[in-house]
Length: 332
Image (cartoon, rainbow, N blue to C red; front, top):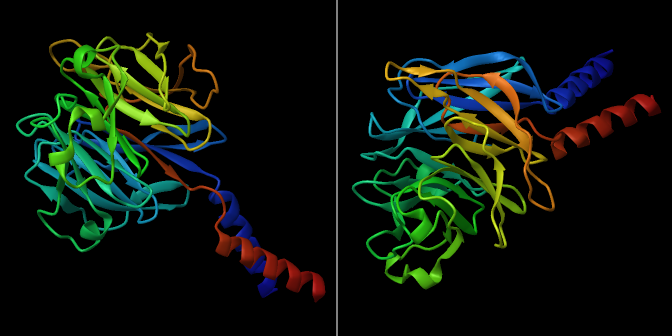
């Protein structure tokens, strides 16, 4: 009887692990919410994870391994670290938020697969920063490294959205992108900005003067601009292509690790406040980049930050446990 109960528990965990959660921020509302995704389809409506204690949550990044969410809150002049857990089909906070980086007006953050944190500052620093995973674990204040500096390289021009795969860091420029690079690729492991001259950076695109969100898939790079356009280009370089011009004010974008890219659209600004806003999705792992139809996933007012929590594939430990229990039942 106990073996059957254990098997049922493991099977339940297996299917729960097949769920993903789309995490989104609303700076105007001071709120972070999630949307449950199953098989690429939204389940229910957006529900809050954090609806108090933040002043203006903009960019989001997820460290899957540590179950930590990083939130850029420029009005608080901090990047917060918020532990979370997935339980009973929802996301919730799993502890008290702490300060990962203080005295910063960063609006955009990213995390690589090693747990290193990246962020950009437009003014006054005009630079790309990195905080190594070990420093975050030890809560070392003031451990950020300025890895790409606009005072040294002209291709750093009021950087905005950022993404990293651990080898390279990609950022969008919010000033003079058509001249200095709409999206630029730099070395993610660099620690000395003295070698940060233009020849060490790769300009990925020059289609837009002002770029907001930047995200990558295995082979492709996508970004949003101030004209409401979502663009795409291969990570190896080449011609950039307009994916869609149907959104109003697209900001962050995020890849689900499979075949879908999500985009946050802030909606209309009418002088009084924000109206509308939604999260959209499109196929992002195409071999040949081309225009795509945007599918609305959920309405979310003043949507800005976007990230994915992957309940993911079943872990090796769970696989082993299932095999052992099944073998015991068969041999019993």
